[in-house]
Image 1 (cartoon, rainbow, N blue to C red):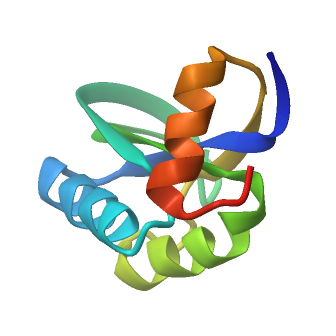
Image 2 (cartoon, one colour):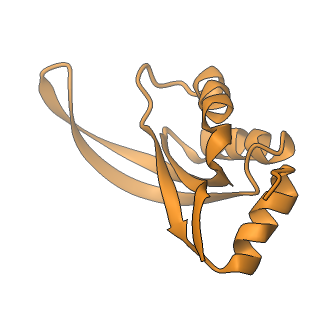
Length: 110
């Protein structure tokens, strides 16, 4: 089933507590139907002119595409990074029953 109505919000967090706090808030506020927390991601990246390495936690949120702006505000308000990695990827296809579940749990008119 094609669906430009939903997206996957990819967020890198500094630790599991931060990822859990943000994920829980997003689900409680019905901005996301689900939050997946994937611990122990090793990142290598440029920051302020030099290469850095860090252990991070990946947070994935399943949400209606139109909820992105509100989700971004929530994430930025509760994230400790100066420039957090927040990326919204469209879900272009998915199991219809799963997409309906996302809509139901977020109050999205699908």
